[in-house]
Image (cartoon, rainbow, N blue to C red; front, side, top):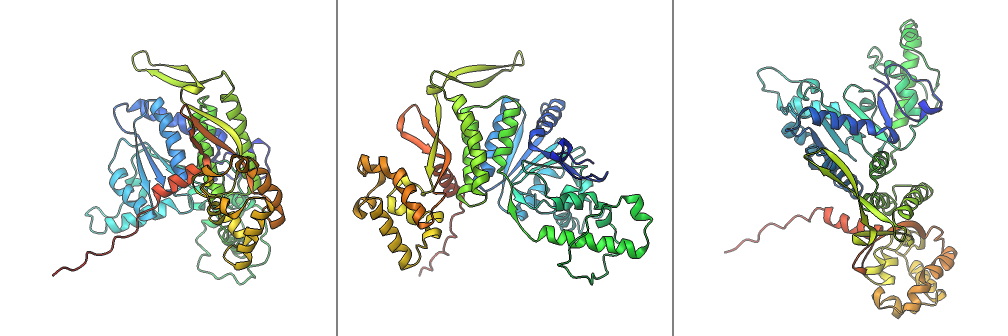
Length: 464
């Protein structure tokens, strides 16, 4: 197994020989090439299974990946994953026994749990009465099957990171120093000699980062090995003590699209929606979001120049030739870069409702209290917008009010702590004009509403 990523390009840290397969997004072409190679060897079989978490970012990433596979004529199937019980059920029903399956892509699922441990638990339960005994995960997985995990949840599970034989982790972010140290000292963590001993040292004590190779570790005295083992255990405990989110999975797939030279308005739109999903749900730092969104805006500008063309890939099944066919940007979807306000569904209801239901505005103004509600009314007055007009549907507000809204709300919002009230984003327009304009944030809320499970139905009433 090997560890691949930013550190091989000048980053710090020495890597041990037992480190796992963790690749950076700019090397995601390896996954695409591997999938195509496996599909070519079994052209009549479905060799790719895509497992998708039920969230907007994962759905957008799935749409981008499936579009690429369709262009390459790679047969695949997609399964939604709502929880880890569902994940293990899919493993038993769709993976075990499928000798043609070669690649499993997990989108926003599987990154923070030990895949092998979770699947082995399921096998233990299913094979309890099996005549041949309980199978291992290696025995149950199809021969040559590889798992590709593209998951924005952090931290990475160390068991996945150390299984370079079957599992590959892909991400845009740089691994933490703790992760690098733990992978480099994996041979210490796997030592079972001291796992039953208690660590009497203070957990708050700084963890030593001195690296010891497998040969050097084997020659140490038992006390020295025990000290190294407990130091790594403390480091692992600290590593797992915090959860956070990495870059959006849709941005990882966007990197693949860019590397393959297949960028188009629909692909950029999907990446923008997936990225905005993280901002809407407070899963990304504002500064990090702005950097990624501005990169998308540069691409939007190049794809949507006046008189420019968008391209679509057309594949001839007879000649096996793929040709990029130009399509005028006005013939389908057109994108534009904009500065959006962090007001939920502003164009679809009233300004007051949008402000009251925006998590960012509600938290900053404290709208759950009377003081917060008074601050909102005062802010509306400072902006010169009557409360009656603020309660009207946005489309029916006076044109001059809508025109000055962005300037006024960013100007006076800073007085109430609303410092990052606008953000760079992408807006979609179709050939039908203004009525079909959709912002990325609005699309996030639409997809979220579709993905939200329905409330449980009440039991049927008893009848006489």
